[in-house]
Image 1 (cartoon, rainbow, N blue to C red):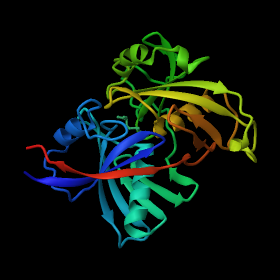
Image 2 (image 1 turned 60 degrees about the vertical axis):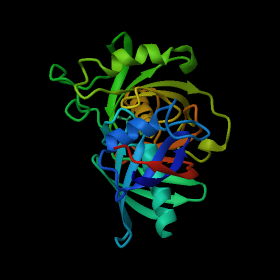
Image 3 (image 1 turned 180 degrees about the horizontal axis):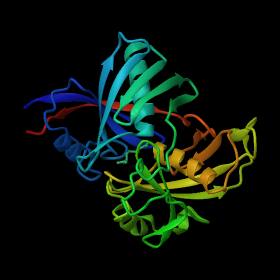
Length: 293
Ligand SMILES: N[C@@H](CCC[C@H](N)C(=O)O)C(=O)O
C-alpha cells in the first residue's frame, strides 16, 4: 500500500489537504472523495476538507511558480479557488522562503504576496459577460438582479461562476434549501456557486483610509463541488463586491470587508484592473495517508 504525506491548511476555515503534485496519487478524484468527506475523511479539528490541492512548485523561477490543481470533494476539478490560492502561496513560501509567488491556475496566472498580516492574491478582473460566466445561450446579456429559481441573483465569473443574491440577513436564509436549484439551474451550463450577501454597518479599523464609503458585508456561500456551504469562499467574496458595485449597491474602489462565517477578508475591486483578496492562512498539521487503490 502506498502512503503519501499531506498537510492540512485553512484560509478563514476554508480547509484543504495539500500535497506536492509529485505525490504518487494516480486517482486524485478518488483521493479527494475519500479524505475530504466530512464524516469519514481525514481526522482533525474538523474531519475532512473542502478540497485537495495538488501543487507543482518551480522554486527556480522568479518569482517562484506553483501550478495549483484543486480537486473537490465530489472529484471535480475547479478552475480557481481564492482561499486555495492563499494557502498555496503560504505553502510555497514555507518551501522556498519566497514571499512573492506566481500561481498558475486554469483561470489564469495569479500573483500572490505573503505578509505577516495576511496573504494577498491578485484575482483577475471579474466578468459579467455571458460567455465568460458562462450563461446558457438564451441569455444574450449579463444576468443582473434577475430571478433564478425564485431568488434575484447577479452572476459573475471571478475565476469560477458565482450567483450572488443580496438579502437583508444572510442567517435568515435556508441556504442548503435555496441554493441547489440555483446551483443546478439551466441558466448555468457549468453550474454556479451560490453566494448570499448582506450589507452591515462598519465601525472598526477594517476600512480606515479607504476612499469612498467604508463598507462591509456578510457572506455565505454554497459551493459547487463541495455541494454544501463552506465557511469561506474567496472567489465568492470577490464576486460579492463586484456584484455590489455592478448593481449600484456600492460605490468604492477602496477595501471592503467581507465576513463569511470563518473570518474576515479584505477585498478590493477597482473600476478597471484586477481585484485582490487578502486574508489569513493557517497550517494545521501533516498526516500520512494511504493512497486509495
Ligand atoms: N472555495 C473556493 C472556490 C472553489 C471552487 C468552487 N467550489 C467551484 O467549483 O467553482 C474559493 O475560495 O474561491
